[in-house]
Image 1 (tube, helix red, strand yellow):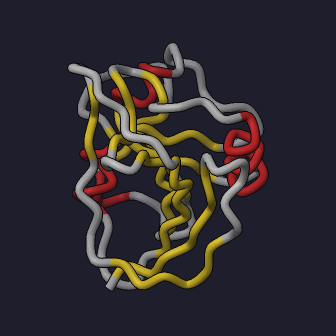
Image 2 (cartoon, one colour; image 1 turned 120 degrees about the vertical axis):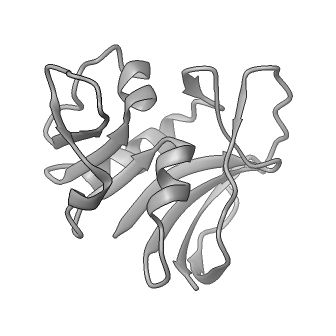
Length: 143
């Protein structure tokens, strides 16, 4: 399985129902990687998109709630899909051998509505330069 998401230095994946930071280059990176693919997200991530599917992608929602979008169970996530969040879903379905594309945002975010993610043990495969001293892209294998 593949994962793609961004985190801050203090492992914040979101604040309330929004990204921790909005970086145009990161959004283009996300679109480039997930375009014309299947994306899988939890209910809260879908809610953060105002219940609107991402364009030019097959959107699958892991939820026990009845939604207008296609819902699936965690046991039925396609292996070639991109899991895009949220933290609970990522933490519950990642396993050794999975690949994580993470945008590391070089700031700490402190807000009472922070959503933190506990990352598994990862082996770095590659990383980019740091852009504008603010963020970089990296790819890991879950060990």
